[in-house]
Image (cartoon, rainbow, N blue to C red; front, top):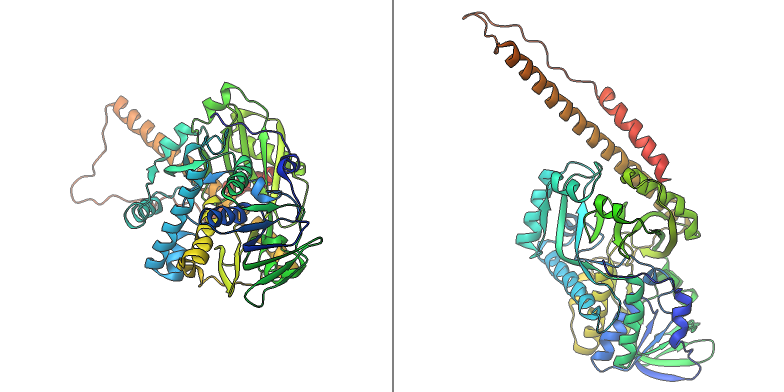
Length: 490
């Protein structure tokens, strides 16, 4: 992999072309927030000929948008089967197509010509920590036949040939999904927006908004701005003027680490060159800089210094790939995302001329790009496909109680995933031992020159009841392994 993750801080990168709004200004569209969603809206609207002003309280990509993994693939945080159940097959298909358009928007922007050193590479592998072959077949049929998405099923042997660990079973390979240097992409997106004519003002927090009337008024500490359309793309950081909107999002901090160089042994153990993620959403990793491993795993519903979780990342890597040993974590990064109660992004018009684009936690880069296209095209071209998101209304995330519940749910999910994986591996080992025992018995019979003995005609043999270990006996070794794994991952 040729991409390089630079050590330049987001603060330093932001000062390169940093300007505050210090004069009154009129614009067609005012975007609040210079993360992935806000910059995508600004770029698309500017390309369509609108005058656009972006207001950012700190600096470009200062939070999650500038500290994300860079994996791009179709879909949403809400599982596809749940999406179909919620809105029906036809509308789910429309939303899935929009998510694919969002991914292609990122790919078109993230070229070496537009963003030098972006390091685009193809291929994403989603793997399962349980034996889910039957579910894999039905999912592949749905993706390939009903949702026109190229996906390939990998059997256990192929997964373990590419990833030298017994932790994973089946996998789904997405050849047209890809990854980029996520921290470079957000600044490259800002550069493209500026080139298209958008004006980006950093260190410019919004003090108040008056969204009544044809021309809306936005007040900042040192200037005022008037615009026909306002787009709220600040996620949980919209602040006092729009606190009620921010409170529809559950803040979740996600952390990732990058190891020191690991040499050729890394490629011997991890042969897959794209992104790898488990189907439970616990681990996400890939090789960067040739021989370093980038790994995302811990998450909390409170703010913490990323460096605090270096030990958790190191132990997690060792538990999944013990042959790598005790690796050194040379860099940690992370940021807070806003996650919705219903698991879908918030995209649409709140009232005439006031739009929202938020809730992209766990959604993927494709969804913020899709939001940019949808909102800009609706404002300037009358495209009303954003109404497909109408069933996913703004829902209060529960405040402090919601954050506590979210943390407990996350811990329970990780514990359940660990227990299910441990039980699946225990059962796999038991099956292997049974086959080995049967093979030894067959070999002993052949060596003795005897075959299976048949009782005389008319005599019915007595049959011993089949050996069925009690549930507790089967679960105990798996539970012990899961308990150890939980201790490692905390």
